Image (tube, rainbow, N blue to C red; front, side):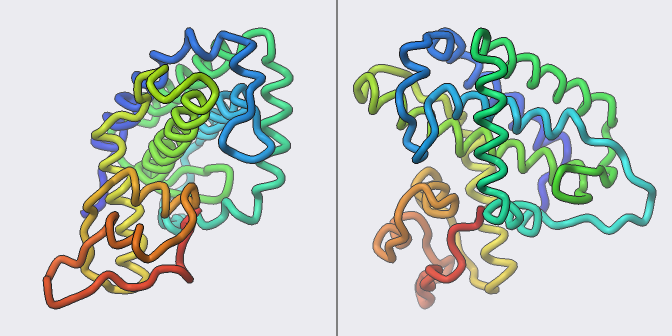
Length: 240
């Protein structure tokens, strides 16, 4: 069943609250200069990307009735072709807000939630950066961004400071929502009846954060019926 605006908004708020608990860490310029787990990105640049993700929601505007929206899978599928542009823009934003990276991301989140409130409780089609989408789809895509990059931040900071140095910034409910929505894309494309077993493992595979491996996939997903097997998704992953 598709996630409605209210459920998606609740997950986005919960995930942002968990990330906002990290503002003290992100204000440390020494930590920010460390390399993140994303090749070529510093931790500060990774943090700045969260602001860019929330700016995308803040900039959404309603479109006329009858506009055909992209699905979540179609919207996320535009990411790979724009990877270089995303990286360049992220580095520029990090440089522009180098003196106050926390303030930038916090202001972006505040503007995003203000736009969400202004768009109301319905589910209009809105203009997003990569095309028209339902508001619910846009909000879910922001939850995907914050969960995936929250996990990137966790792995980055623990690599820089030690495994037990920081608390997990990923909200369990938001993680579960993202795992289910990414699996829904796979089910829609292949028709398989699958369930999530390990949400974080699945999200890392689906987002390209872990190398594809059939054994890892079997630990992340299971077939709903014991007579079925988890298919090889190597040609389908990553989804973004």
